Image (cartoon, rainbow, N blue to C red; front, side):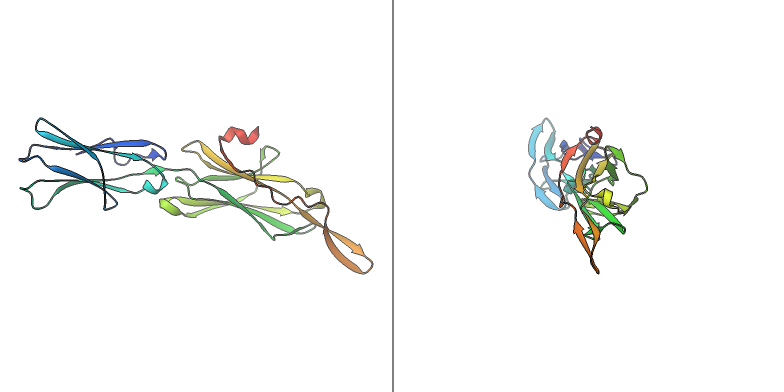
Length: 225
């Protein structure tokens, strides 16, 4: 049997997981072997009375979600090893967010979109746009499958761009509510304004602010501070 993890429960990435596999009786005592996704891994074995046990320590990370952990017991009297297997379920937060714009150059008097996508998270990250410490309403949100059995999430905000919006700062937040962990990044709008020179019409930047990155893992409360 394997102890140290109750199958069907979920553990957080960063947890130090200690699993123990125990085989009783048998003559001679069984040799215990650990496998992770069918690859042999090293455990520490000890014997006591008529039982043998082996401990496997795992520093859990995102790639361990849905990992198959197997313990096999065999001795010279067994043709086929006895085995016990379990599947790990792991919560992990998004590591980063990526902001893009459509179109890349925002023009006053036209419609534009700012889009933010998170890296994989389990469960799916809750995505939101913030401005001046206040969540922005009217966003479009969605998810799709991501790495390690997690989910990629996105949030999209459509803007009716005006000249006054130049240098406004919008912050994207991706939050894993199960773990109380979030990450954010910010973009500063750089609006092209329309000017007339004789019979010509040109677009110019009032001031080039560019795209500023301010990304950090944070608690949700930090975004409003």
